[in-house]
Amino acid sequence: GRTAADLVDFVNTKIGTNLRVKAAPTAVTVLTPDNFDSIVKDSSKDVLVEFYAPWCGHCKNLAPEYEILATTFARSPVKIASVDADQWKELGSRFEVKGFPTIKWFPAG
Image (cartoon, rainbow, N blue to C red):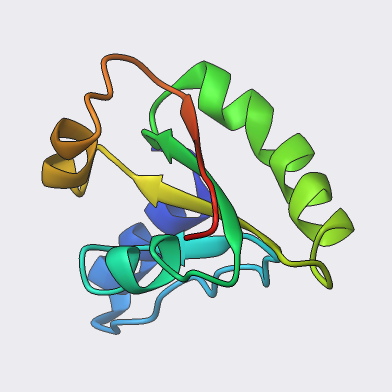
């Protein structure tokens, strides 16, 4: 691989370390099965959710624009969120995600 994570893994195997690439800070709320319902069903906030797959080219192209969107709405009653629907397939199935990216609006209440 040619990503930073792949290169770190390569060096780790050579020198016996277990370091990881630190994720860049983001304004996008990352959803998992553990926090999905509490965030999406929050009656005080509208939530826009992107269901994505890390390998998806369209998702990769959307990422910087989605980050701008999240930064723009950071201090508003709208939450901009994303979920890795490839990793958390049950969430993708639950909301009938058929392709990537899929963006769904969850109104407050």
